[in-house]
Image 1 (cartoon, rainbow, N blue to C red):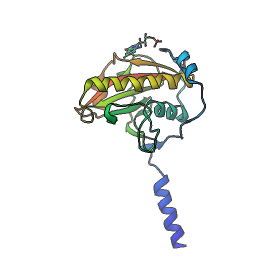
Image 2: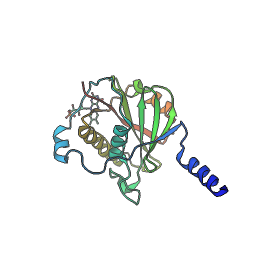
Image 3: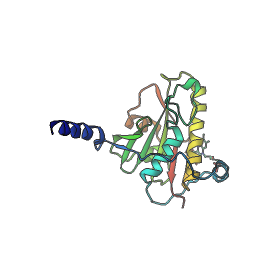
Image 4: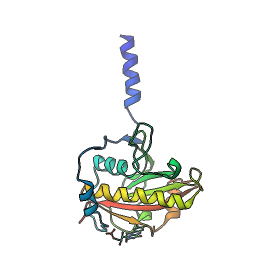
Length: 198
Ligand SMILES: Cc1cc2nc3c(=O)[nH]c(=O)nc-3n(C[C@H](O)[C@H](O)[C@H](O)COP(=O)(O)O)c2cc1C
């Protein structure tokens, strides 16, 4: 009996995540539209409905963008010398989260709506792509690596019938960096608005 109680407590500790973080549903690694269809559908969209994204959609977009796709921890996007210097953040009306790819979870870092710092479109969600020069000391390669992740976001959105726009003209990256508690070594490269196209 005591053993069962101990086991139950351990399971509870392992499976109960605090409100500060949530596990994402497993992404689809098979099926979906074909690569050719996704390429044919890829486009920039700047107008969205107010519909929020589901956890399934969030999981699929982040996994496609820079998720783990192999046992050895390598990712859906290549990085120079496999430095994996990219971190992704999700911004919604409810707050900001950091994507922990290996654990497949989102960890809360703010309860504030930071979307206005990331882009000017009325979008239910924004993705922020951040690089860290402590992990890869070449802005040239970090810029290139960012491009792979951005294209993955475009293709994932095409596959989910969602709209997205890569945003280089970020309204206030200083304020965003501050709110996301980025270090001096970290740089906001690009953001993406995401939502259901109008
Ligand atoms: C690096 C990069 C930065 C961009 N920055 C912006 C931006 O700040 N604002 C915007 O409205 N679109 C931005 N775009 C989207 C481009 O304007 C868009 O990709 C281009 O017009 C071609 O349209 P398409 O994506 O539908 O083919 C950016 C795209 C890239 C790749």
